[in-house]
Length: 270
Image (cartoon, rainbow, N blue to C red; front, top):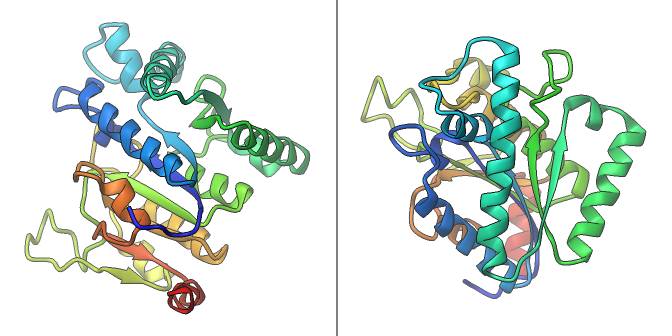
């Protein structure tokens, strides 16, 4: 890694990236992700991890064949799976001498001014104490009115709360393309975006997976929120080697959503 000044970074990883072809947690991949985050911390960066896959983990623990189609069963899976997920992260980070703190949120937590302030204070203390905050939506109590609906939105709002400098969205695609690469394999990758327009969002597709809840549309909406807040967002293939560290160094490929002012500031620092 380069010797960039220390930054506050939010890493968001989706269910599709965290699971294998059978929908089970990919422990080997998760170990590589944890190692990359440990390297960021060793370089002096503060990191918050926003993770999906509680429901996927619950399906595995409860030996269910597929994702339930009713809210009580989904929330039960999330309840069981969140325990498995945080225990796995705690063990992986613990081997590297890093304590973790679990932060479960709903939309109403960040919509309410007092609750938002308490959440900010919690993040600040965890980071000051050297712990790694691990964030997920509180699926066991979230209903349509108070749910984020996806962790892309959650990651963006958390980044705004803690005044992060960058959000790295790790996904199962290599970035934003000019059109749907599933329909047109030759669709060119868009490496840099300064503004997310309504037209761009309208053209995006929804979730393309039975495991995850987000799609390109939610990622673009999250990127727009971040651009409005002056925060850089990198959307990239989470399975690439060393992708998290490379994203911090601007070498991960994918699509970078960056306010023009951020790019100018980076150039002036060089």
